[in-house]
Image 1 (cartoon, rainbow, N blue to C red):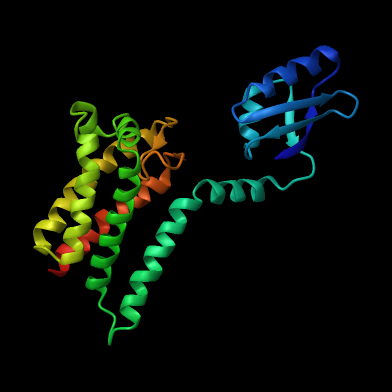
Image 2 (image 1 turned 180 degrees about the horizontal axis):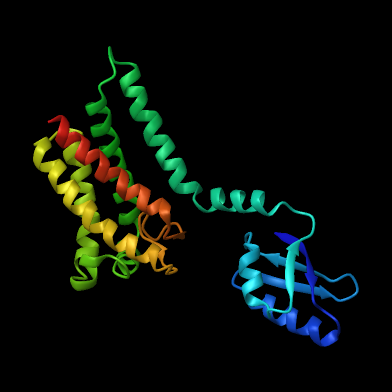
Length: 236
């Protein structure tokens, strides 16, 4: 990806060198060409980088702005590209579980939630199992339980698998739902701490297969399971 930016504040070759050295050090930047003639910087990057990141890297005397691209549109496209795997998973799970209800005689909300949670845990545990070691190394960095008991990081993947199977066979709904509520509530605490502290940690929700950053998407993922657990307990 290549974008050209306007740079205000450059007055000489020394400024050009300072701007170039600062921008090239930004993560995911591959190359930078700076020109004092037209006060511009052409940046080659692996993925779209917000203007605020570039501005932070530069000295306060230099101001950077987009020249020809729409910054808001690029950020939106970048967000969807980053979270495409998890968004597709939720779309597939939602579509399949809704189809099960559509072909039935009437929509059963409780049954739909059970099927959704079953698919959720089975799919997410599958990705964790693909690289259990990689998942545990990421998970132990932010989960409050895994930090104290590192073995929990590996056990957690099997707990998700067990919960998925339990929801599929409708094993003791009350106990299964309570365990889900406790496990996901404990999990979301570490996620919240990481996001609120603005720490850059890889999310382990899909194991080590996809490089997903910890964000509000992870909070929504865990929060959804908690909300469904509570709803199912109320309906019981």
